Amino acid sequence: MVSSLNLAVLVAASTLAVGIAKPLQLSSGIFYDPARHSQVNTTVIAEDLSLVAQHFSSIRTYSAKFNDISAIAMAASANLRIAVGVSMGVPWFIDSEIQAVCDGVAQYPQTVEAVYVGSESLKNGDIGMYTADQIIGYINEVKKCVKGKVPVGSILRVNEWLHVYTADAIAKASDLVGCNIYPFFTPGTEPPIKKLESQWGEMVKKFGDKVRLTKTDWPHMGEKVDDNVPSKNTMQQYFDDYRTTWSSYGKNQSYYFRAFDSTEISGARYEIFTGLFDINGVPNIQLPITP
Image 1: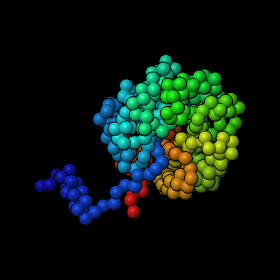
Image 2: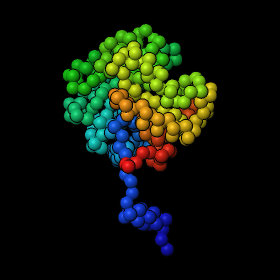
Image 3: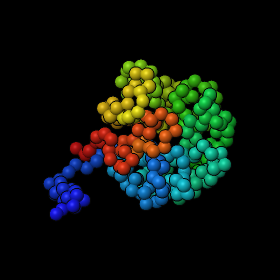
Image 4: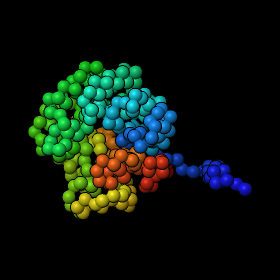
């Protein structure tokens, strides 16, 4: 009697024998975080990034370290480039985050495509917890240690970049302006890609070629927001539009959000269901293959 595992192996071998299309590695990037694992170690990170590298050329992270593991070193070992973050969520960890960036850039300068100091960290109502001057101070610290080898910037929502005047000072101090654009939270019945294009156009008009799209997504499950309803069909359409009609035409590097669904529920359920893969690495939508 053939076990289900052995049967799966036989089927896979037969498929390979007659030929199978390979995943298409996109030039754009994807957000990655291993936090869904009960134990975060080099083995599970390497397995995740091996899968990610089949589909994307680079990753973006919130943090420079996964526990005490260098995000830059792990990206390098997977032959991925990285837009590495300096996490500002816990103030007393910021210095060690910056040091991890400095060490990683020194060791793997060709791996790091950007450093982003903070992600939505500017204080604006109930968003963020730092002033512009504080963020700029940390940006300058990172610039001092990377010595011009990689561009350094910060990430804010499109709302802050366009409507909070102190954000202008952060943009001036930055080599790159990382912008998070959320069609799912944008009112209106237009297709998600149209909402992205409209807000992107406003950003480029204000900040020029410094702008990078650092986060955009559409959930496949969860609660609706206004007229925006999570679904795999809409997620599929938005991702396809993003990769074929948006990121492919003269845009700078961008990062879809995210590689894997999350298990960390801090609010609404739609927050954890934006991954292109589920928590076990099974695709939630159809990803492009080599023609």
